[in-house]
Image (cartoon, rainbow, N blue to C red; front, side, top):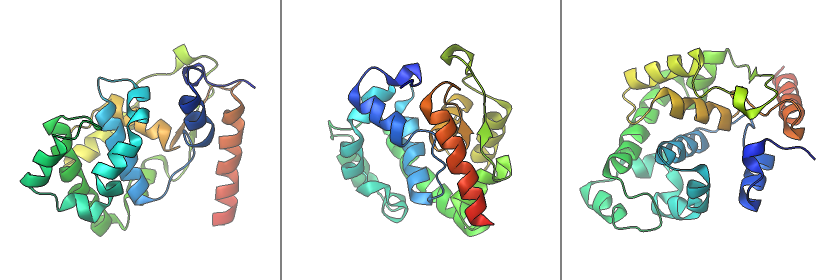
Length: 197
C-alpha cells in the first residue's frame, strides 16, 4: 500500500495521513482547532505537534470557540507554564484573537466553513502531483485566503501555514496520485457532492 512519503516515518503519522489528512472538513470548531495546530507548528515538525495534540486539547478546552475567546491574561500566564504545549506568547494570544475572529466570521457569513470553502467555490482542488517534491508550499489560493484572513483580523497566519491548513482540511487534495488515499479522498468528495444534491 503506497502512501505519501512524509507519512511513512511513525505509526502516528501513518494514522493521521490515512484517516484525517485531506478529508474535507466542514465543522467550524474542528477547522479552528486545525488552524491553531498548524499555527503552532510554524518552525517545528508536524510530528512534534501530533505528539502534543492531547495536551493541546486539554489546555485549550478542546478548542471551544466560546471558551478560548473568553481567555484572559491569567489564562495566558497559565498556558505559558504548561510544558505539554508550545509555550509561545504570540501563539497563545493568536489562539484567543483568532477564536474571536472566527466568531465574527460566523456572524457575517453564517459559518467559518462557508467562508473558507467559498474561495474554491465549495469544491476540493484535486491536484495530480506524482512526487512530494512537486508539491508547493504556497499557491494563489493560499495567498488569497491569507490576505482575507488578515483582513478579518486573524493573527499569525502566513501563506505557507494556510497552504498546509488547506491541505489538512481537504480544501486541497495533495495526496500524491499513487498514494492510496488520493482516489479515496477524491471519491469521498464526489459522494459528499451527491449527498448535498
